[in-house]
Picture 1 (cartoon, one colour):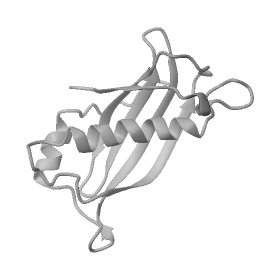
Picture 2: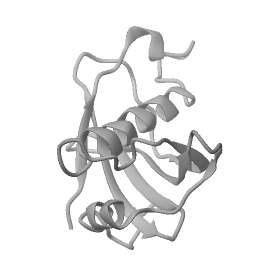
Picture 3: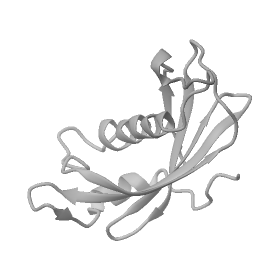
Picture 4: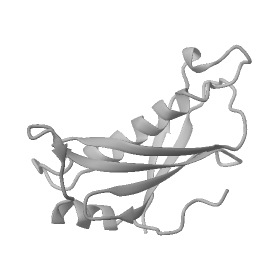
Length: 140
């Protein structure tokens, strides 16, 4: 089972008044990693996989420890914990080699932008997602 790794830079504007990365900013980090995973790593040149759009149906986030601003990026590790007919669940850890800052999961629904409605996961998308499937979520 593979895991997708995304190196996420911290920005000065990510900090809150207490000098920590703001809790809302972590959603942006998850979004950046998810987009990198689903769109830039989609199988095949010219493949329509995931190109039609997707929507977030749910986020769950456990804030494990504060993250203070620094110049070094954090790693967002992502994997798939569930593949349904018309949705998938992605789990994440935002971390360094020494510690985990956030554990999270997102339910993503593929979406047909032209029809303005959810759609089913294609066979090609399912095959791609299965490479990252680990049905055990991150330990809290």
